[in-house]
Length: 133
Image 1 (spheres, rainbow, N blue to C red):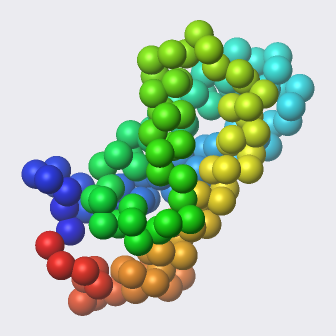
Image 2 (cartoon, rainbow, N blue to C red):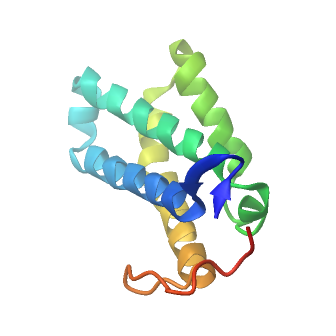
């Protein structure tokens, strides 16, 4: 299923978010001291939030509605913050978002993907998505 003239499928958009979540985990794994001392690591954290927000905006509304446990408005607001109001970023809150909220988002998306797209162990279902074009 592609989104509004975009050639990217819902599955690929979700894969983008999950890839960013993996990067988030890598950033967090470096520890609080590295986060505090390394400006480039903090900028990478901003980029991860930006990518997640951008990809989330590309998901069709019916997909977002089907995953009510995800705070989609907060995801969009965080993207706006890091992309446009970056001078107001609280880096302690940003790190907490990367450490706690992003993994929860990834878990929700993986559950939805596995249920709706029929994926088990990373294998695609041959008959395609469980929803129409």
